[in-house]
Image 1 (cartoon, one colour):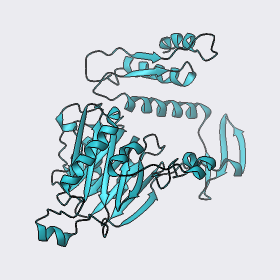
Image 2 (spheres, rainbow, N blue to C red; image 1 turned 90 degrees about the horizontal axis):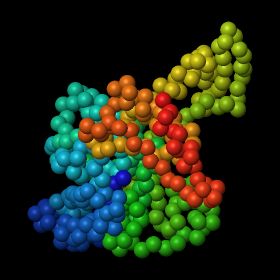
Image 3 (cartoon, rainbow, N blue to C red; image 1 turned 45 degrees about the vertical axis):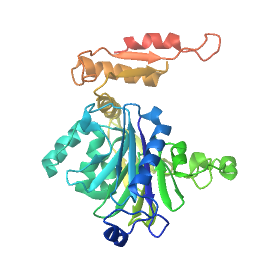
Amino acid sequence: MCGITVAIKLAGRSGYCSAKTAATNGTNCTNGLSANHLEPQLASSLDAIHHRGPDSHGTWISPDGNIGLGSCRLAINGLGPGGQQPFSNPEGSIHAVVNGELYDHRRIRDEMTQLSGYQFQGGSDSEIVVALYEYYGVSFLSLLRGEFALSIYDSKKQLFLAARDRSGIKPLFWTVHDGTLLLASEAKALLPFGWQPEWDVRSIIDKGWLTEERTIFKALRKIRPGHYLTCLSFDHISEGQYWDHDYPDKISIAGRWLVDKKVYATITNSANKNVRETRTEEEMIEGVRAKMLDAVRVRLQADVPVGIHLSGGIDSAVIAGMAKHLLDKGEVRLGSNGDQHLRCLGIAFDQTSGYDESGEKSETPSVQ
């Protein structure tokens, strides 16, 4: 878990430094949101969410003071100085902050090195964001696999991009206050910029904070799962969707029959295309198992000790069993240290509470 914060002065608003003003003053704007003015605000914003990333704080502010990015980091991959955020490309035209974890990053790093010759500064999984964006543009979002909230600024295109992961695991809130576009991992990180929270009673009653982009505060929005926000030329703000669940329409099943132990199902998906299922039951089971093993494998990549939280249920037991299987096969390593012992953790309640599952947890480590 990390934390990010962003402030962007919008064009035509008080404090915005135009190209003309910057040329006149030698890129040193003094009409409001200058670099000197923004630095303490970013620092206070990061202090407010220090618990999300206690290992290091970092900021980047444009020379004209129109945009600032901040990050507080919890180091998981790439523990050295090369993992310090914000990240920048070698040319210094693209800057990014990332909260979360991007899976299978080592494979992507190798691919980007071969495709574009990108020179990575460290071993952080989050650094692949800059390399992917530089090569693919905004469409790189569809290539990401993980839990993340990110912000990128491209100074050449004057394009700002923020996005959340497909399931919305990592939070990212935004608002416009006093002519400034503000984004942060938590609402309280916006307070140093002058934003003041006000209850959105309608959203609370409607549960708009749960199912929509609304939150419990007025004029404070969240980027929805699988969505992104852009701000072009410090002016035009828009939102879009880069990913959505795509399941066949099970309601419109046209036929289903059993032939030689093979299940055939003709169904119509959302695009009105007929899809015929030809896999056997055994092939379906093996397919699910292979995908789960791959999902567990990429989540075990880290430069710190790795553990598994057990709930006492079958889901966490399966994950623990698959992690043990991958370890025994030598297909993964737990962290970068020599200790490859799989640690399982759990929470116990009073046995009379009706919520305690410690008995089931104690049996789980034996799962193979």
